[in-house]
Length: 173
Image 1 (tube, one colour):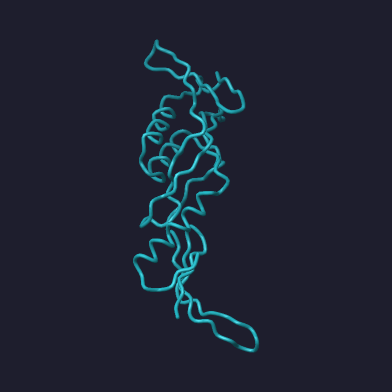
Image 2 (image 1 turned 90 degrees about the vertical axis):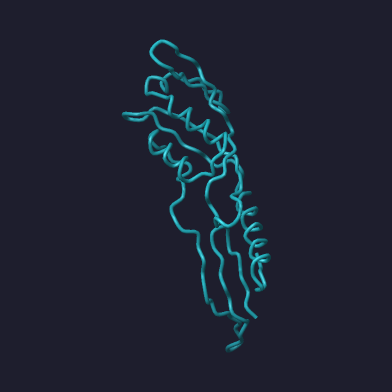
């Protein structure tokens, strides 16, 4: 009896039957499947270009993601130095063209779906807090996870459902 064990949002193990040797029980591990690739670095400030590339390549396309990319593209160093921060949200000064200058409310929290589990299942959406600050040469931005890890439980359940529907092996999560 083989078992597929969903160990986490990015790992599935194929295990053999339970065997007994010298009063200890064990299973053979035949296969480990892991989510390939690099993930977005949450909680770390990045320059605007790296942040934007990360948003474009490591998140499912959505209106909120695209709005966030547009916001980051509109920020210059002088803008980030002029911020209003109430502890929950930030306001940064953004400029369009040469003459028009606006204050833009930074959306918080933002709901995004990063690629963090197997591509065969829908990527779970999570809430993130966006923070902006002045860097040594350029403004920097960071996303901080704000869902308490709930996305992991949703991803594990989605992977288990997919495996149950697409294999004949017993699945445990």
